[in-house]
Image 1 (cartoon, rainbow, N blue to C red):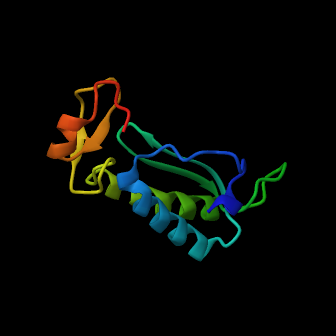
Image 2 (cartoon, rainbow, N blue to C red):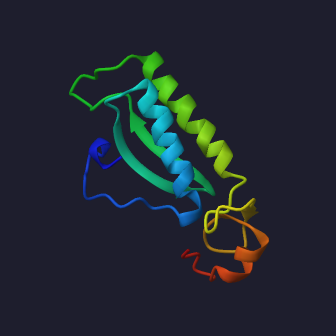
Image 3 (spheres, one colour):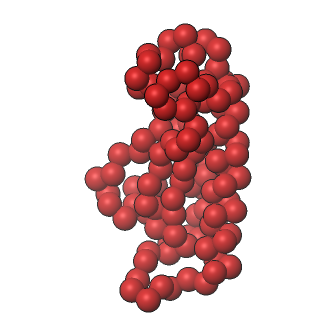
Length: 119
C-alpha cells in the first residue's frame, strides 16, 4: 500500500482491529484503479475514512467524475462495514459515544479503552 501513498512517510491512523479491513479496501480499489493515489487512512466520526484518488493528482485534474464516484463508492462500502467492527480487536462492535471521540468498540474493548480514546 505504501507505494500508493502521496506522502510515503504517512502513518495510518486506525486501530489494529481495522487493519484487515483497510487491506481489503486497498485491494478493492487497486482492482479497479491500479495506479490509485492514497491520501489518508483514518478513523473519522466512528468509521473508516479511506481517502484516495483514481490516479495521482495532476494540475487540472486527470480523472472523470465517474471514476471519482467509483472510488468513493468502493471506499464508502468499507466505511459502512467498519461501523460494525471493533477498531481495537476486530470483533463485532458498535458505535460508542462515551469518549471525546467516537469509536466503534466491542463490549470487552469498551471497558479497556481509556477516556482519551487511544487504542
